[in-house]
Length: 269
Image 1 (cartoon, rainbow, N blue to C red):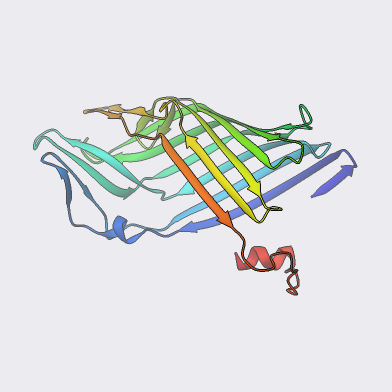
Image 2 (cartoon, rainbow, N blue to C red):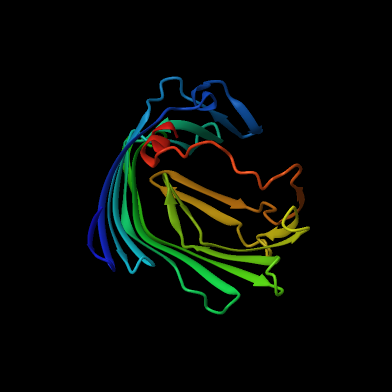
């Protein structure tokens, strides 16, 4: 990180990651989901190796802009192929040729809008491209790509004089994007949760609802060469949660553990 002055910081990072396939992705046996569709893995899957580059700028320790580029070599994903002869849908875990993405991210945690209201905002404009072998189309190489947007705003509210009652309201929007050979439709979600603490913060009661209006469902369209598949997802995403937490013992005692240096902690993780 290079600190230009007290209000401006600029930094550059490079990260190399290796993702090894799970057992379910390597299992070659067919798992039938219905009479005309099944999942199968590939025992010859190769590890996925990612190279990521990020150039970032922070203004006034509040606003962060990041330009990034990510190259995925041999990414392993599940692709649905339509076998027009046997009338089957085959969901195959396979290595595609490559995926690249780049974009601009913006993050801010604003000063309190009001004395009891804070806002965190994140937005991303990104390009995603996948190149893969169309196994049911004479093994031709095919490319899908699209510019997309991801937006999220998290609102933190506190109530009562002692601020022992809090609420989080999260609004998320995802524009249409590509996933392998497919295009996924846009989605919107609204979550809300409440937390009330009691007995000098020794106990807390939480409750919330995710995807209040059940708007996180989507359609996934795969249309290229001799493939024409439509998946209409109608999952019940709305979920109610209720929890109670109580701290036993003298929870104010401080640990005598020394803090691990951040570099060493990152290495251990």
